[in-house]
Image (cartoon, rainbow, N blue to C red; front, side, top):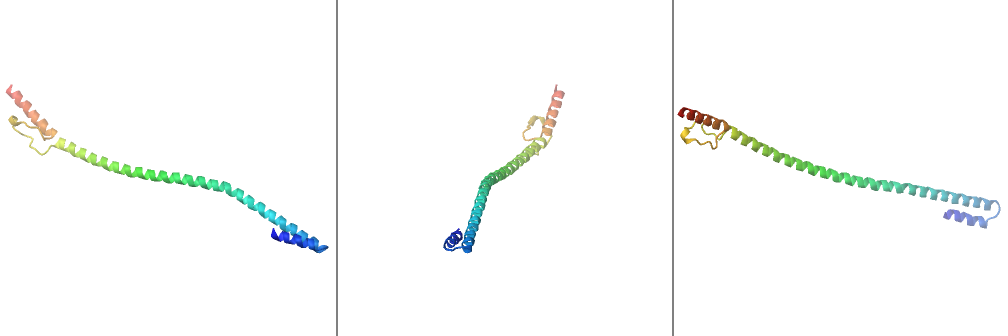
Amino acid sequence: MAQADQAAKQSEKQTGRESVDSFKKSSDLRKQAADLATQIETAKAQVVPMQKDLLVAQGQEAVINDAIAEFQKQGQLLDEHWKAVQTQIAAQQGLAKEITEGGGGAATQPAESFDAAGKSITEKAAALAQLVEENEKAS
């Protein structure tokens, strides 16, 4: 723009063909400056929606990162709870085995000292059958 002003001042000082050439140069420079200003404004106008899109994308990224972190925490909790459940399953299996197989006592005891505590279901069933048999013989 300064060049255009300088060319306009020269054209005022000059006469004839030189004045016309300087004026034309001044007009061309002003037109180029105006065209560049228009291009700059167009570029700025195009940047505004892109900046808004960038802000939206950054917000979405933050939400996704938070969701990922939450899913990872839930996955860790799920793993911890699954381990606890597996421990409980093992304990229940041990208890079931102890109930069905007994604590290791003998299956045959005299009827007079019938004590079923700590014995397996099989051992208790055998002892009960023995008591029933003895009762039937006694009656």
